[in-house]
Image 1 (spheres, rainbow, N blue to C red):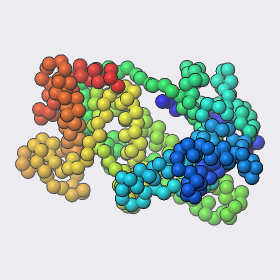
Image 2 (cartoon, one colour; image 1 turned 45 degrees about the horizontal axis):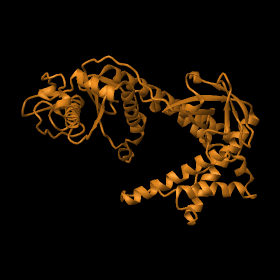
Image 3 (cartoon, helix red, strand yellow; image 1 turned 180 degrees about the vertical axis):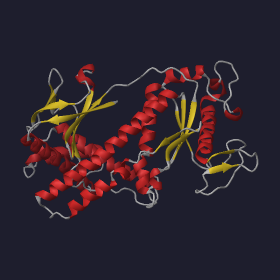
Image 4 (cartoon, helix red, strand yellow; image 1 turned 120 degrees about the vertical axis):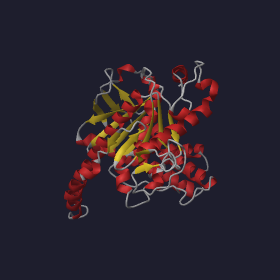
Length: 406
């Protein structure tokens, strides 16, 4: 699946109708959550049927104006939160189980259509909404070209409201595949806060710290917002300026990790990363801001995405003892977090702490790869290839075979 995003250009009256449609979608979702709490809904089909009940109720005329498939899409959102709560309870997840909550009014909100409720022009540069709210025709601004895809490939259309305007996302049924020449390189990555990551070859990438660089500006805008009166137009303007500033930071960070992940995938035939529990790590309030600013999880998502596109395996390994064990002899060398140099008393191996961890990550990934594909698949060419310290590494013929299967 591909997601193409474009900006909607219209007039204020059209944006107002989109706001009404978004509020109606939120009303459908919250009503289904309330009906589930009252015991009226016990399955997904019941949620679909309840959409019709809301649309036929004369007390809620806005519900009937919303497209029927859009109502179903919001019913799916509501039931997804209910199913997630059931799964967490069944799995006995520690702490909060994620009990479904009512969606509140906020600047960032969305409305989702399936296959009806909208119409694309012949040149696919204009989008018209045909439901009861009659938002009209919007011009599409963006670098994406929909001419390469058929209308039947567009499975969903989502309208997203942000601080800087309204956007539309097209969910396209298409599998992206790109060709890549084999490089014969494998890499292990150890992410950190001093440097964004250190690889197994000793290369370091600096952490850009987008949020920290704009922190002074954000604090200034936050102070301006706090001095405005609640409910006033000046407060709405100040909140919009602050939201735009945060949006700029988020976009620059995402663009940077996207380009970096693509470069890593294109330069290697196998990438090993740590399977970090970022959600648990941000519970440390002293490091939460820096960890979120580093965007480790987003970087891993882009690595896995481009790995599928270019046919490069991305293997996540457990981070346990990757910093403590010696990558040369395998013996455990206990060190504190402030110790940045690895010095093994057993084999006298000296290296940067993060570089040693990256090598351990790569070795663990190669072992995991060997257990997954088997020895025959590892050395399909019949040659006895070897990697660090005699560990088995994938041969070029195996990587070509793996790429053809992905």
